[in-house]
Image 1 (cartoon, rainbow, N blue to C red):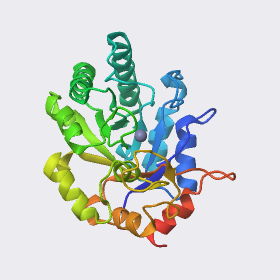
Image 2: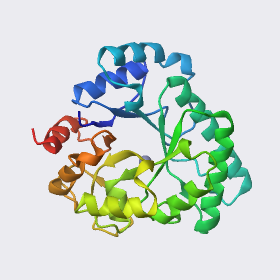
Image 3: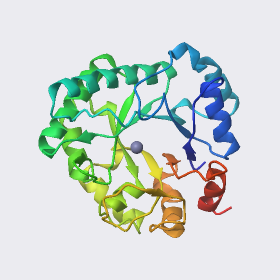
Length: 277
Ligand SMILES: [Zn+2]
């Protein structure tokens, strides 16, 4: 079955069970959550999140726990040039990995970070991952491809490769490819096989663990990172449909992070459009 889902909320009172219910209401067979607000580091204690109940419900619905993706908050910058802030990010990332481990999920998507010195930034990010992995043997940190706003690291496949090269345990590092971000960063994504060939030559396809499927409000190379609803941006439905239905990525979770309308998310409609239903 082609794995296609969406970002869902996780909030009181049902927490993870509510996330699953929301995913199912959108006809998603995989989903992505934040363990709290993406802009904050405040987190609920894990025993409130209904982890056991989630596992039971997933089992009933034949959804493997690996298809529940977690996204780390945006505010942690493991590449920060200030040692104190970098250290804070590293410690928070370790706590987040511990939470993901307790949830039982496998993939944690991480925005690599920012630093005007890309090479140094890549080294700092790898250091943070190596630190986290001293107490981690399960969670795969998936470095996200970025649009290249400001000093963001990860808008070039070479930067992600440089980080992966410096990570000691290669089994615990991967990549999350975002269609909006790589188009914004300047990659031609019209033909998934050609783009994935470039990805394979530089990073290696075995590292591709998650895809974010988003349209973009901006033209290729704009470095903006503004997601658009499927078919309403500059990438367009035809190209995104090709990505979603590309056989090589059928078993990889593909997650929509498209804007909500005034009436809420329209993932269900978008999922049906992408699958051609
Ligand atoms: Zn992201």
